[in-house]
Image (cartoon, rainbow over all chains, first blue to last red; front, side, top):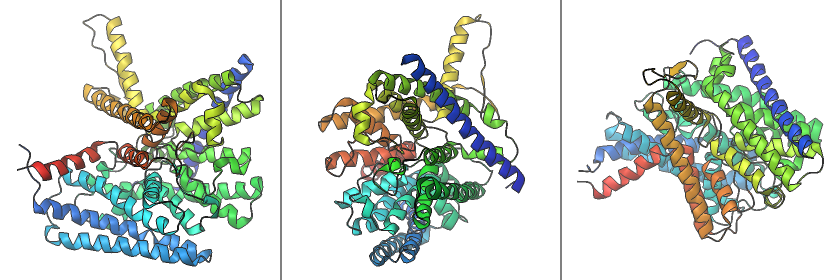
Length: 39
Length: 503
């Protein structure tokens, strides 16, 4: 196995958490736009 | 002419099966530890019985097999072992659950064990809120073991030095190796899981303590259990009200992060952890996931708006988006009560959730369903065909897709993706037909069937201890087929047929 350094792993984890946050913001924005348009 | 399997085939299969059962039995030491920690005496006895049963079965199978240890392992052996091992683990994993007295029958306990192992999350437990901590922990541990893979557990613990590890690994619906060596791949899967276990369990425990107000001990127990259910996209919770119990948007947000971590391909985790972070943006699975997630949210939002389920924007976004993410990652956490889902959400929103559950998330992750890689491949193939009609006949149209590296789309890839997709759709419909046969309406039957076969666990209230026993068996089979992605189960069936009818 390629040696995994602490820093790349920590950065990778933060990166994946940021991806999750982006997904939440994006989907919430889509839902909110539809709610505003319809109601 | 079908050839009847020979005694040495059976001995070889028994040898591997014995090792896997033994490795699985050894994991029952963990709930025994939890029972000791919480001062629960009866569960210690129940799990000791379960452990002894697994050890006896494992040793018996291994003793039958000794003369065949050095035989060559063929694909058929690997596939048969995997399909049979999942059934064996279900039967053995259900023993301590049944002994606890919280399941109405051994069939109910088997249903819950398969639901845990296949990371589905449909429940038949009775009086969950008074379940001993050790048994509750075992339900979630089953998800953690099943999510990584029973075979990955066995490879890591016992099968490591023998031949056949690769055949077993592939048989468990993992056709992508992260590293050239299967043992190294299994090690990496555990490394990712343990790193996220420490982070996720700490995050959820802290949220449980500070955002929900649980005492430290309960917060830690809930944090550990919910991490195992969330990261492995399972959907069990330690109490009966699912995520509604916590009444905290901070807690819900934390579970969403854990679910998304679990829905990412282990190969992609490796790429990101080794510095190739751009892969997250370029990978076809992630792009397809974002596209289908948007479609699902649009459908759910339109359905909720149409049915006037929530009057305020906050409730609308919080419930709608949470359920969409939970369904699409294949987790099945519910921030809405099951009967409420059917009564207030309206058919369009349910269709959105159905689509999300059926599609699933990444290949080589802990999720079930059709998977984004296959959906992406089929979408690309469709686009290529349209492009071919739009260009001159002399032009050679080729399509590239990015999945960890650049790959040219070929017919074999499209055929394989389309076949599995078709098989999943047929499985969803077959379960729905069975539900209709038992008297349920089509939408509820299709919803529950897709949830079982896609290993999701969202329920519209159909799954409960009083449901017909026949339907419980149907869902067990669906969860088994769905988790193993058909091939190894069909090979097992073919093996049994050849044993009975072969010459």
